[in-house]
Length: 288
Image (cartoon, rainbow, N blue to C red; front, side, top):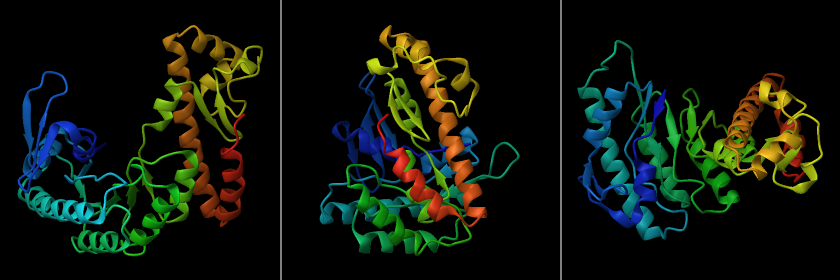
């Protein structure tokens, strides 16, 4: 189990939070009550949850942040990281198994800041490293460039985790640049909105063309739902606004993502990742 620290929520609650060297004060979007997170409190919470991998408390600036803001944000993240690291090593796991703390490299889309952050985090000697603050409004090519900049510095014998990314193509591009781990809401969020990812392209299940298509949801059969239901039935469920539609689509997308990274591992071991990735990239962009 991996737990995030709340850094992205700091980003998403921009209108109802205040940042300082000490931590982050924010108001609940539910009842308006005030809360205050410090790096130490975040470490204590993640220890209590019992996560195998704990993420450091950071600030995630928007992709459009100017250099001055990105610099200020990076200084804040590095200061918080020192305190997270200290608290982590002052405390013990609560449930009889070890836990790891992953630092998060920030720096927005500025090469020098990304390099500085990657070096700072690498010097800690952590068990793994995360790349944060990407896929938050910047163009995809800038994201790929920043991944390359960071991965040129991070240790090659530790896992690299790209946070909050992304589309199937984003994942293949990340793997090509040395990323090992990913997380993203996209498989389920897009599934709830009738979008299916497949090895042949993207399907919008609300389109009328699927109303009379009685072939399986995905003939490749990444999960039982792919073969158990037809496209026509899934189209009907979405049109009828049945919750089952969102469940089937989410299950399919999760199974497809797992297949995609499993297949990527095979192609790497077969020394065929480049040609396979180029072939898949063309297919994944299709609208079916």
